[in-house]
Length: 497
Image (cartoon, rainbow, N blue to C red; front, side, top):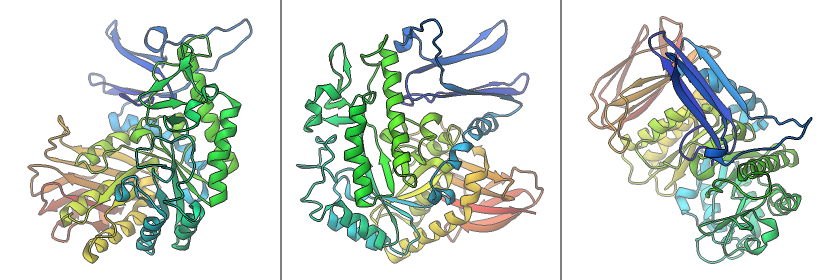
C-alpha cells in the first residue's frame, strides 16, 4: 500500500522567487522523501526507503546493476496545480496503452453500494435490466460472488463460484449483462487469501517473515515471486474471466504486508521483489486478455502511484462513496493521477433531494463517472436527473481527458465540517473548451463569481448540469452563479470564442 498515508509525491513552493519544485515516484512499495533547507536553499531527496525507514538494502556483486524506480522531477514558475499538471502529464502515455473501449471515458456502474456484498444471479439480472438504455458501458459485480457461508469473505483466495447465489454459473450473469448492452465486470482480491480458504493453509505458496507465514488479521499473502502462484492465479482468475466472458476486472487489495518479507538480503528488498512479481502478473493478465479493462482499487486508492496506474485503465480515487467531502478529495487526487483514470462514485439514494442528487453527480465530473446505490427505487424524476448527468458527462469527457485543472475556493481545514465552496475549472486547449465543476458546502453564499482561466478573453456557455432554479451567466471571462444552496453541485461546459 504505497499510498497508505501519503502519496509518493511532493511539491515545494518558493514564494520569494515565485517558482515550485515537484517530484513524484513511480514505485509500488516502501519509499521515502525529505524536504529541508540547506544554506538558505530548498532541497529535496527521496527514492527507495532506506534501511532505517524501510528495512531496505541490496547487495550487488561486481558487474551487477540495479535499476531504481522512475522519478519525475519538474521545476517551473507555476503554482501547485500547474506543477501537478506537469507531473501528471508524464503519465499521459498510460492512456495510449488502455483497451479501445477506454479511449472515450465511458461510464461505470458498480453494484457494491446496491447489494452490499451480496450479489446473486437474480439481483444482478434485475440490476442489468434496470440499467438497460441509460447509457452505461460497464456493469461491475463486486465482492461476494465467491462466498461460501454468509458474507464475511473469509474464503477469498480459492475463487470458487457460490453455486447457491449463481446456480447457472457466472456465465449466465455475464451473458445477461451483455444482453442488456453492457460489458460485464467482476471483483477479485487476487494477491492475498483469507482464513477459510484452502490456499491459506498451503504455506509453500505464501509469503513468510522470520520463517512463518506473514499474516495480517485473518489474511495471508501469496508469494507473487513464485511461478506456481502465477500458474494458480492464471487458472482461478484469467481462465475464469475468459470462460465466462468478463471484460472488466476490479482488483482490490485490503491488507498491508508491512515492512517486508523473507527471501532476499533484506525484508525491504523482499517486499520490492514481491511487488515486482505482482506487477508482472498484471502484465500477464493484459497479455492474455488485451481488451480487458482493469481497475486498480486497493481499499479505495492505496495504490495511486504511477507504476500501478501504468498497468491499469483506471483506479478508485477513494472509498468515500457517500461522504460530503468527495469533491475535495477528488480534486486533491487529480494532482497526483490523471482524472481520466480517477474513478469517482455517485451513490444514488431514493431519499436524495434534487440538491443532493446534483451534488453527488457533479462530483463525478472531476474524474471517471461511476454510479451505485438504490437504482431500483429512484423515481422517474430522479432518473431524469441521472440521465441528464450521463449525457452531460459524455459531452464533457474530451475535456476531462485532455485538460488542465485550476482550483478555486476555501481551503478546508476540517473535512468533517466543510464550509464555503470549491470550483475546479478544467481547460482543454485541444478542445477549445473548459469544464467548471462547482460545489458549495455549509454556510455557502447564495451568489458566486469566478474569473475563468485560459487564453480566451471570452467564453460562452455550451451546456449546463444543475438544478433548474440556479441562474448561470457568463460575461467575457467571468462566470456568475445565483440561487445556490448549501451542498449544491453543478457543472458548466464553456467554449472559447
